[in-house]
Length: 258
Image (tube, rainbow, N blue to C red; front, side, top):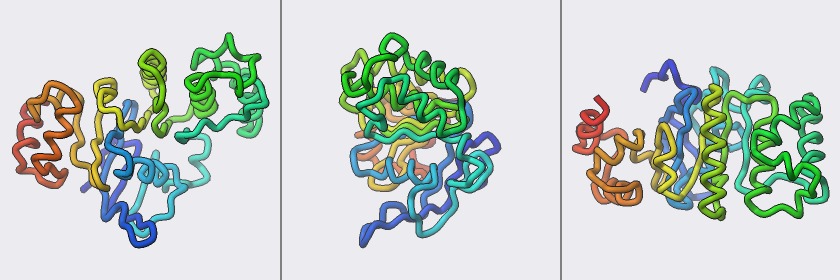
């Protein structure tokens, strides 16, 4: 598999093991520049492990992960790549503004950068309040603001909408779209399949394999399903695999995207 010229991330032959369990065994995948790519699948399928491999904090057994032209985790990527984990990375005893200014200073950035990130995630009215007094969704926004400091080219978000109500999820996805419209690349993981329709590209995972690399429209057209949940189940039942170029689902998807 050759690297795509428009790929922000190129994963080739990635092998990851944890104890006696093999998480990935020769995984290949690309993340396209300037897009919102959804990494979807059930809990335990390998989403977080792939994200950790992309940001360079996962111990691997083999393969390569190239990010923005450099090896994952390279020193030169520190300001070009940001990563927000599932847990909110904030100090509860500091205000929202002080949290952002602390992380901005650690990154060699100024107060204006901190204030701009707060405004981007819609927390300007809460900037003086303690992070510990915020709702779960608002604390997630603080973590997102930290991830946005310095205008990173690649933003990796691990299940940022988990546990949020539909209104907050909608607001966050609108924020993601606005960020992508500035030219950044976003990789957003979720196990909520209805979020698939909000992405430009979809990577559907199951048991350490990418079983589909497609678009929302292509996924529905290829499976004939009415929604993303039903489409994912159809892929599982059909035994779809990314290497199965002659698989009926793959052929239908190619026709749908012409």
